[in-house]
Image (cartoon, rainbow, N blue to C red):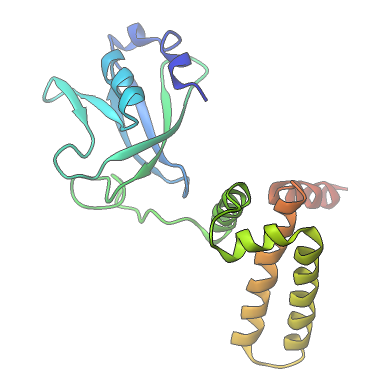
Length: 206
């Protein structure tokens, strides 16, 4: 995405030179804080890839983390339908709130169990793009679709075997192995977990 494309679209005049900027963790989807930007702070954010606000109390530009080191690394941004509010997705370096908490609402910045699957899917996709990496996932992609499909089959069989016993730890371990290799298979086929969920939703609605 070309972040600079939004520069002339933001309606700074509506808020007397300022627009609200909602800060969201790109991985966990948690809302971390709310700040305000003017045109200069927005442009500095794009230039440095570190979120910079306009401090209304200090009446100057303020880069989050300039004193604490807890920067907000810019990952993506979008503009709302009225063109006067920004949604900025970031990778936070450390706690976000000045009180030392993860968010300004004193919430733990942690993905839900379901959201973690989407994070894992993203990591698997990155491994697919970097096959030279020395990782188990990259090695699977290098071996090709037949090997990946075989691993899914093996893990499924192992899960069925453990289902016959009452050892929760072994059963859950095999279930996790199967889920991981299933996500790798989806990535190998250029499909996403969301597509599978959409199909389940469609079937459920019938």
